[in-house]
Length: 389
Image 1 (cartoon, rainbow, N blue to C red):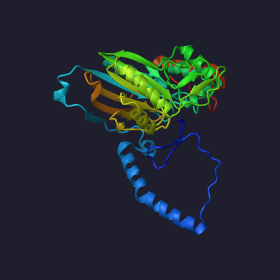
Image 2: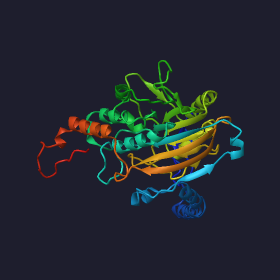
Image 3: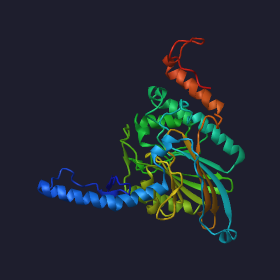
Image 4: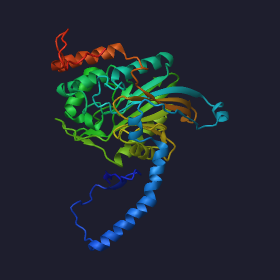
């Protein structure tokens, strides 16, 4: 049965209600004094019970946006956890993986004036890490478009995808904002830069074929990593009609894919453009998934959250301000994470060196699509934009 998501704004797992619910139905209500009394009782119960419990749990698992706005460069604490006993691990084949992840860049291509973020700095950090660790996997959980630099809007997404394709990603997924110019334009931009993008749950109506590859397998160091992509999607305007999966079909499809991948890989990662609540829900539906990299909700998980299955769930805010960095040891016999250390690394301009090629590309694209932002060389006119390095 198709279902729709109705969030419970106390922060707990959203309810899943039938898609066939008639929202036009009118219900008889009690008299006003009775309603007031019932409302007061309900609010008291929420405040003293579920709300307090959920708030306490959330405070332990992630910091609020306000915390990070007040001190966006940290210091942040790293989290280390041993999930499989060392004595057991020594008897099994194991391997290392360094996972880097971002999400919800939202067209913040140029370095922001406050000295935090910008894709040239993200690329610079990734380059630095890869120079030291060849077993690095770099993924993005979607939403490169909307809300940011004008050049992306003017170019109908081309500028953003050209920059995204230059920062060394191993895998990305489409976010709901990435459909803003329609599915046809999204596919054009992907093809333009040969972007390694995957997404299940989106099929053509006429052939039932997946619009994008659903999975990929990457050899990273000594490990084979299985990747599944998924998104909440958006009305995908297209010359060729498509269907997008909702719950529970999406969870069922991810479970099928994860089961197939597990026979071939050492670790299975779901890259999901949806919030951490959905990440935990999808992990529960697909127990073979070991790690979920989320986006969409712009949450910041300073320490990984856990699904009921034990899968780790992470999200690293927005705008390329931080790069989630997870150092993993994988038990290849059990195909599980044995140990991890997780840390959010701020893209602090005073500490991270930008990639000069990406910085130059951003500047060239801005000049091409927004020439009005620039004045002739040597001009000192008020308000002239200073080109980025």
